[in-house]
Image 1 (tube, rainbow, N blue to C red):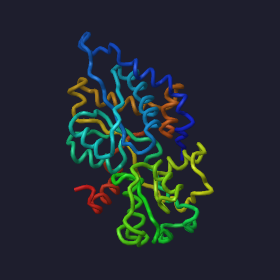
Image 2 (image 1 turned 180 degrees about the vertical axis):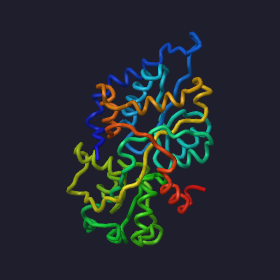
Image 3 (image 1 turned 30 degrees about the horizontal axis):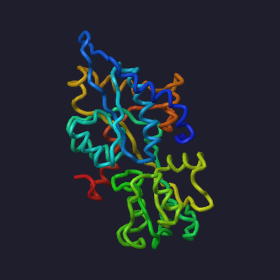
Image 4 (image 1 turned 30 degrees about the vertical axis):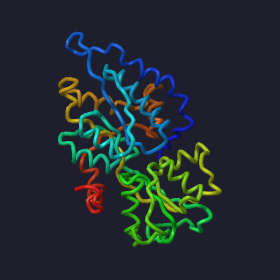
Amino acid sequence: MPRANARPRLLVVASLLGAAVLAGCGSSGADGGSERPTLRISAIPDQDPAELEAREGALAAYLSDALDVEVEYVPVTDYAASVSLFRAGDLDAVFYGGLTGAQARQQTPGAALLAQRDIDADFRSVFIANAEAGVEPVDDVAGLTALEGTRFTFGSESSTSGRLMPEYFLAEAGVDSAEDFAGRPGFSGSHDVTIDLVEAGSYEAGVLNVQVWEARQEAGTVDLDKVVEVFTTPSYSDYHWLGGPGLDERFGSGFTEDLRAALLDLDGSTAEEEQVLALYGAGGLVPVAEEDYEQVEEIGRRLGLLS
């Protein structure tokens, strides 16, 4: 699986962030000179805000050039806020996790699946533990019973890789997250924070997105003498881009397809594209369909996170 390497690459996108700011100055529409609206993109806040700013700023610069519109990255406070703002029409396109994307599509009729990374059809979560908790690595889902009795934290309550699918795999092992941990499990809010809390011993164990875990190891920002990798789950479908139902009305007929094409054309063929993909930890972007998320939606309904 490609690794994100987000932290070491923050500096290489400084020029792209500058381009994102300049890209919207004086954009004109197809009607002969009237200024086109700003395309507002966002992402679920699942990791360090500075890394999200760099990643989404780089994408904004690319999309501005590809679509000839001003593009603005709009940070959000939490997962629920991204769904609410998308439903209200305040966000035009969002990089969602599997569950939040399903919630957004359910609450926003006419929303369009646009693309996913090449790694998203084969995504995984990783369970970790503080080295002093006495939890040893296990070989299969059934071994997750080793986490019973620990102080445990998920990521966000609406995270696919930090909560939804881990809940599913724990249940497959016979572990009830409401009953079998030492107290109610925590919700850290992001994958980076989960690592930090487990490393500090605030929680004895936790679970997160494997891409962030690998990136933090490569960046040297996790102490592997203090944190044990317990188990990496089987794969499932996760992140994707979702476009709002009003794109064609705001930007002109066919804009949704133009945005989809611009994303799918992001293949690393230029230095700018290569840097954008590196920040997303991907080799390229690929088509996505609703049926790719049937498993996520079924589990979401089972957990009461989807109606």
